[in-house]
Length: 266
Image (cartoon, rainbow, N blue to C red):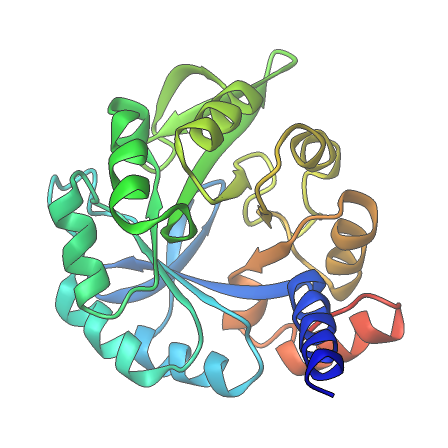
């Protein structure tokens, strides 16, 4: 019986691992949740702690907290707000913004983060990926990539989409994976805030070229967009902000819709 029980447990674990995740994103500026279009024209979307608590109770699988002003303001992430959000939720919690060292990562993990999101700092100092991965494990490292399709090429940007780099999207993601990133969050700047759907072709390419889970971000506008990105691209998770913040899509209704379309969700 013990062997059979272990098999059942293993099967349950496999099903859970295959389940697609829905992740709301809290972009934080001046202590408030904000959202814009193409990373510009930000508008207020509510208090981070209240939104986080609501999402945890509404069936969100994880929560992403990005202090979008930290890098440009040359400071660390707002630890007090991270602590408040962490205390209000019972789901995995990823935090990014202003993480420049192992010390910064340690501070976030000590204050309630489960994973660390690296973006600009990893581009400037790629070794940071190696260091944090070796210290805490690759399951703690999410490489966040903001990219725009320019002149038939996906170019990576840093500092909240304000500075173009010399990195090509798929090459950079592969390098980050090889250095120890355990997950990639790809945001298409072309699609961000447009509500016209995710960057499906780019996501298909990314999933085909990397072995780590891919989170799709940028462009969610209606419930069908989530179906399309899961069915056509086989991403591990889909992230959105404004459609959740402003009540355009309810997470429980989204999950019921995905189940009706034979997409496994938690």
